[in-house]
Amino acid sequence: MFSFLVFSKPTSSIIRRFKSSQVKTAIVMLNMGGPQHIDQVPNFLRRIMTDRDMMQLPFQNTLGPYIARRRSSEVQKKYTEIGGGSPILKWTNIQGKLLSEKLDKISPSTAPHKHYVAFRYVDPLTENTLEQVEKDGAKRIVMFSQYPQYSCATSGSSFNAIYSYYQNIKFPNDLKMSIIDRWATHPLLIKAIGSRISDEIKKFPESDRDNIIILFSAHSLPLKAVNRGDAYPSEVSSTVHAVMEELGYAYPYALVWQSKVGPLPWLGPFTDDALKGYVKQGKKNFILVPVAFVNEHIETLHELDIEYCKELGEELGVKNIRRAAAPNDHPLFIDAIADIVSQHLQENKPVSPKFLLRCAHCTSIRCHQSKQWFSRVCKSI
Image (spheres, rainbow, N blue to C red):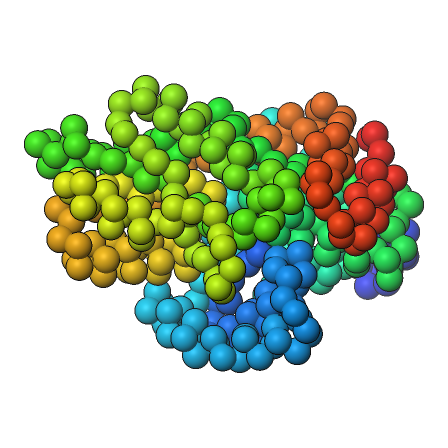
């Protein structure tokens, strides 16, 4: 009998019970991702340039890959300059591990929890992650956007990718799915960003601390998307004002925008132009704050740190310019995402009314079909 228990193959029902005992609640962390190695850059760019949720180009299936090929060497050089790849997967895994450990303690009824990373444009790709969740036997899945502020081009693209995956694969009858689509003003997120800013203020010479300008920098958006009704600009603004309230409005501040791509009009003022303008006004001390990014990646490590703080700062003769760190693994940030998920699990609201509302001038059939699908699939737990 003993040898039978040790060496015989387990039945499929035992395997299913074992798997489900390992993962009761899957937390799928959605983000665009970033290449870990420079050889991943061409495919990363190709996926971005052919995603019509991210951008709309004429003859996109032809023009998109062409642009990706043209830009690959330039982007590879930038990744080389920040260490050879993006740390976004590393940070997301650290955040997810700490999140799951905390959830197991504060929400034992939904434990054990396991985090999964679902990137839009690079491994681990969304479709592969969803396949893994099913293999692990999870009974409940929370699609947790890692963009605090919702945009159709970022969060929306990830949710549409989930919808597309399940058009080819039948959604499991025994899997319960719910969505966390935005969390721009969560109090602990605000405290975490405020703490990062305070850390940088302390590094300024005391004589300059009263003259600091805080520039909150977020990825820009084409004005076409803004005029369509995308919620992103207003949600980023809500984060900025909540952080400044946390700081007692003790410093002058502005919201600026970075990472414009292509010739079409984008939301401004742009971060570099704002720096130039304030320097012309005689301002000499700045803190750049990545207000829409929860972990370090190329837009913080290269664009903000190298292109703006170092190169542009030297060109303009800025006296002091520093960049606040992204939330990363700050204890307040881990508490924030744990509280967001635990409250979501307790409230039993699988999808928010705001998520199901399309932009006022939305003409995307895919967006319409996706939201209809989520409204049917995300049922009360």
